[in-house]
Length: 240
Image (cartoon, rainbow, N blue to C red; front, side, top):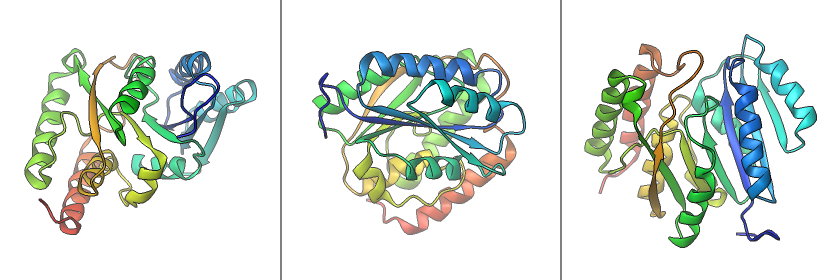
C-alpha cells in the first residue's frame, strides 16, 4: 500500500446512484469533507445508474466544484451489481470503499475501518449494521434470513453480508472476478474472498435510517434476482 504524506491510505469510493435527487448533494458533500480532512489521496466515483430525476444534473454540478469527484453515467438502469462493477473498473487507488448514496453510516467510520484493516493486515473490512430495527423490522428479519441462507449454502459466517459498507484492497477485488449484476454482488465479494483465502474482518456500523425516499433494493424483483444469482454462484464454488 502506498503511504501518503499524512500517513493515510489512498482510497477510491464507489457509490452507485439511482434517483437520489433528495439526498445525493448532502451525501457527496459530507463524504468529501471527511475524506478531505483525513485522506490526502482519494477519489469519489459516483455511478449514475440511469436516473430519471435530477440526480445526473446535481452530480454534474457537484463535479465542477469537487475535483476529486468523477461521475460515470449509465444510460439505462442496469441494477446495483452492474453499476458497482462499472465503478470498480475506473478506480485507481490502493483501497476501494463501496457505500450507498443514502448515507447509511457516519462517514467517519471510513477512518476507523482503515485503521482496523492496517492493524489486522486484512484484505477486506465489512461493516455490520447496528440499530436497523429503527427502519423496519421486516427488512431486518429479511436480512437475517438472507445471512442464514448464505451461511447454510456457503459456510461463510458474516454478520451482515449485504451491508453497504465494505473497504477492500483493490488488488484483491480485481482477483475475485465478480459476475453478479444484481444486489447479490455484495455477498459474492465476501464469498469469493473467503474461498480464495483473503483475510476478512468486521466492524460495527451504527445504522442511519434513510431520510428521503425508499430503498430501491427491497422489492420482489431484486430479491428473486439475488436468490437466482446466489444459486448460480453456489454451483461454481466448492464449499469447505
